Length: 212
Image 1 (cartoon, rainbow, N blue to C red):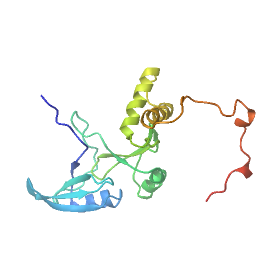
Image 2: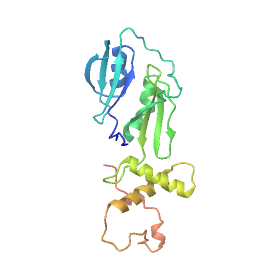
Image 3: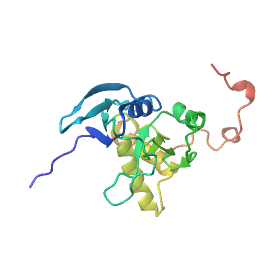
Image 4: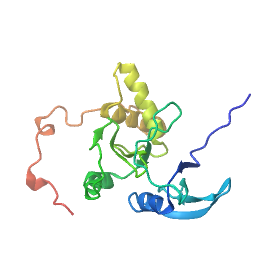
């Protein structure tokens, strides 16, 4: 017996209402280019819209002009979709609450997840959407999943209840140690300041480069 080995999410398909509501939300709010459209080949009365979420994968929507948008929260029963998380840059995330407020879209405000920040709101059809922003970049050759797996191992070994920034920082260091060679005989942490007070002193304002 062999596994059916996954190599990434190919696409996610959602049931939409009318065509324009999907375009206005996925492209007009979230900035996903509308790249492809054809009939739903299993239900030709529906249209099948394709959006690029930013990584070349796809989010697709089945639309039908006979369906009206219903903002009622989507089902939470087992097997239902709880939410869809969209990756955004730190710069975009810092603007998220303000830009949602401009559209009068209710949201949760920023949520601290330890290794990332999140903000939640609903699409016009009641689906919970998360904008997620990692607090770290993985070392060269590693993925965010590699860092999180190592951070999980570290927090379990330390008996901590959830991943925090310290686990992520130590995970990045551990992965860098394992993946990047060095000529040094010892790569242990060292103190080049030899405990001098100057190592703890704050820099003077005139020593700090001006912005730009």
